[in-house]
Length: 327
Image 1 (tube, rainbow, N blue to C red):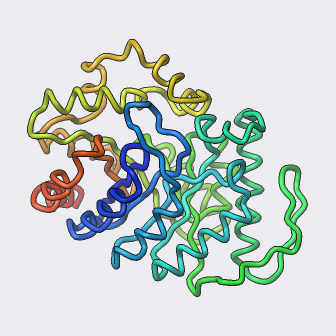
Image 2 (image 1 turned 45 degrees about the horizontal axis):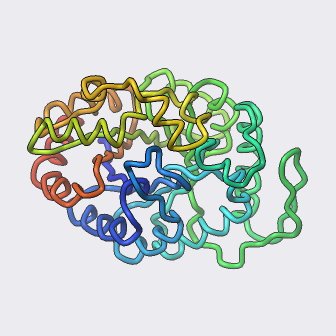
């Protein structure tokens, strides 16, 4: 079976709305919820970007059942990995052991704000590998010190550790990131439904573990009773999604994404994102994920003002249809 999740898209809703959506999504029957961790929205039209960890603390208090996850936090620049470990342990305690720390190598969009330069991808992967070692060392308990090529930790200790260790999921996009990071993680995150990623991850993961791990994907959709309205909204707020992640990781701000997508048409967006009321279109877009081997799939409903109608529909129609299709 596949678990289906709801994305708390911090780029398109404010903190109060995100917390309300989290409670309604749990009532609607979603299995898990993921929260993006950004400093900027992708485009000015999205209009939001509250602090993810403050939102998570509140979400942990208004939900009881759903698993929670960052999708994803970059633990190398805006946040030092020792601080990320402390935040993750705290959310695990507040949520009653429902939290997974999702991490990635980051985007220039969010990390440039600290003015430390934007390193090439091989350096970012090296930084992330060190960060994962630091986080793991702190999760082990006791005092921890570390001296690496990118980070130093001096006698750090997490004074409030949960009884259940926080699982770590890491975002990957190809062989380089999988081979480097799979042995250091508990689960895989990817946004493309590629069977080769799942197979290579399972092989690399099994080198240091016993058995296969969860593989978590994400699918943007724009549900609306009016398909034309859905296409317009998806084009306005999500036309950036068509770029590859190698490109998306490099652009420095919303204006750059606006410039890079100025020739993307509504038709282009409708070809890549299910728009409108037809549930079969959503199921057809989701099916490649479980066919590829993904165990979890988080949906993004595009449009911050169009969440609660979507969640009501998902409870009645979409989630039963997805579970039946994936069974």
